[in-house]
Length: 276
Image (cartoon, rainbow, N blue to C red; front, side, top):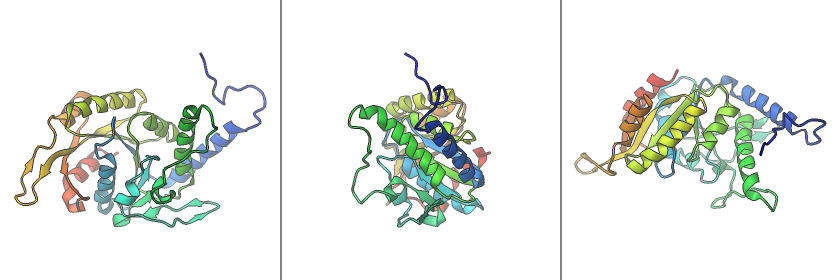
C-alpha cells in the first residue's frame, strides 16, 4: 500500500493544506531566526526524569549564555516543564503570536500546561471515528504551531523536551531542518539501556546528531552524611555512550528538587563542550 503526500496530489486542493503547511514552516524559520541552537532532549521510555533534566540544564546554562535559554515542552499529554521551572500564565497573546512565560533564572518557557485548565486532560477535537489516525496528525500540528507562533526572540539555546519514543524527535527534525542535535537521557538500569538504545539508533537513522548521554538517578545522596549510594543497578549511561561514540555528559544523583546552578557545574561544562 502506498500513500501520497499533499505534495503529490494532482489537481486543485480545495483544502489548500499544502499551502497552509508550507506557510507555517516558513513562519517557523522566521520565528527561530534569532535562536542560535535547537536541541531535542529525548529518551526511549518514560520515568527517567527527562523533563527534570531539561529544566535543570536550562537553569544551569542561563548564567553562562548571554542570549539566554528557552524550553519548549513537547510533551503535550503530560506537560511538566512549566511547573518545574516555576513559570505561569496568563500568556500575552495577539494577532502576531504569543510570548513565552518566564521561569526560574529568566528561562523562557512554553508548555501545553499553560493552556490547559488546572487538572484537565488534553482533548483533541478529532473526528468520531478512526481517532488513532487523527491523533498523531493533531499532535504534530500542535508542535508545529508552538514553533510557529511563540515569539522566542533572541536565544542561545532552545531545549525541546520530547515525549518518550522517537516519533516526536523525527517530527522535530523535519520541522526544524537546522536542528542542532539531541541529548539522550537514561537511568542506570539495563531495561532503560535497551529502550534508549533503540531511540538513539532511530535518531541516527533520521540523521539527527547525538550530542551525548546523561545518566539520571545514578545514585541517591544522603542528606545527613553526604555520601552517594546506588539507586538502580546497571551502567546504562556509560554503555550507551561507548556504543554510540558520544560523551557521557554527566551522571546525576537523585534530587528531590532542582539543584542550584552551582551544583550543575559539571553538566553545564560538558554541555558547553558539545554544543557547536
